[in-house]
Image (cartoon, rainbow, N blue to C red; front, side):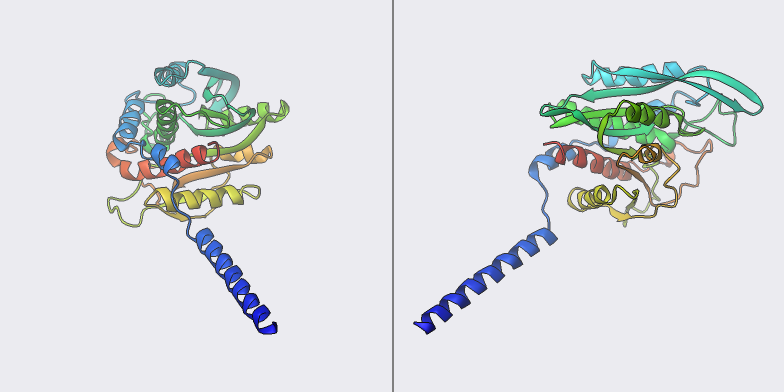
Length: 316
């Protein structure tokens, strides 16, 4: 009798050990979700390049230039062409002194959204700024801003295009926001995050893409830097997993420039945010050489996939 009990004990112990080992192994080696993968595979490098070229061809998207509302309306119309008939311009007033002249301007964030099917009051945001700047030209005339930040605007538009084309019905609301006036002080994201804070808006997280189209011609060892904040380490870890599962990217977590883009005002208001940027320094930064011809759209596609994967995985 004791021998039988002992044998049963050994068998049960081995079974439990085997189960624990298999669970640990599964957790350590996640596999792609075919549902998420279907959306991610819709992200297209040529489509991203055409969007960046379209933005570059505007000549300048400088914050204080007279064409700022025209640029915002063109972006709005692009969202509408994808089926986002609810796209709006969210305006805010900006007084800014530049080169000794004080400008009094209205600025325009562009917002498109898919309403959540289960919990529409909670919101996930994907965004990037559309304004640009050049230090070696008159930015009122010439500031192409292909990488900085037509690339982030293109990523926002491209994910919006893919989700709409596949009739994605998210659990919570998704907002796609192209922010104005980032270059002179993060004004667009500061205005939106403040409005959200004062109205007690429920923002689950914000994904920010800025300068995601530069990588040297060598396609090996491409790496994205994922900047997080004290309240968003878990979101950064989810992004790292998405990179592993759905892209060819390696990752880095260097938060040197954590205050330098539109994710930062969200963090300041207590919202969870992360910031995607190339891990390679762009020598064309804020110059007239920031052109489509100096961008790498294979790299841009891979980074854009990460935002797409996170939005779908966390809203299916």
